[in-house]
Amino acid sequence: MNTLRKFFCVPVLACCFVANSLAAEPPVVKDPASTPKSVTLARGKYLVTIGGCHDCHTTKLMTEKGPALDTKRLLSGFPSSEKVPAVPEGVIGPKSWGGLFTNDGTGWAGPWGISFASNLTPDKETGMGTWTEQTFIKTLRTGKTPGGRPLLPPMPWESIRQASDKDLKAMFAYLMSLPPVRNMVPSPIPPK
Image (cartoon, rainbow, N blue to C red; front, side, top):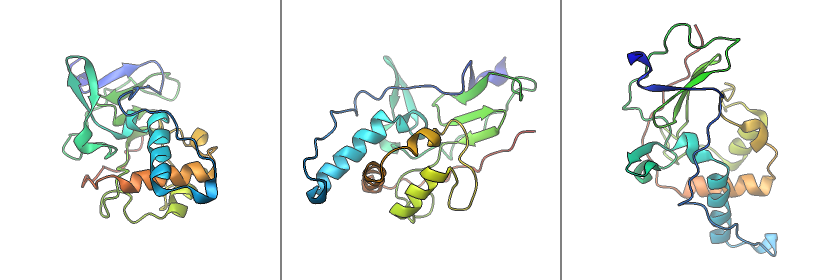
């Protein structure tokens, strides 16, 4: 059981962590052609928050009230300082309903292998700092990174791709407004 210390077993592949402290009412936009940048950023923040992006892309700190977002590393993905926990033999397989995730929810293991939440901050070396709005939209519409690698579970790209271009642009604008966090996320590990 010690090998499970860094991973928790879950009966489903998705988990929701509600970031109530960051949620707000969506801004009402009367004339999209004259939307000020602050309204676009507020809309992007709202969509990123209710869309559950923090669930996987922001590390959590354990508090007396349970897990809380690590506000110093918002949306910076799986921490490069963490060791990748071992996946116990026989726990995950193609016919299994189970999956595993790290204590902070940024690393996942399942029949697809091991996936790590990406750094969504505008860091130019380790995040999305070199991405364009078009690259972001294409990635979420096709489920493939700019290099062609498929987005892996639990990333809900098939749902997110249904968002309007306007909403995806607002999300991208918000992500690009965050402080860059240097954090090199490991590459996915294929199944054995």
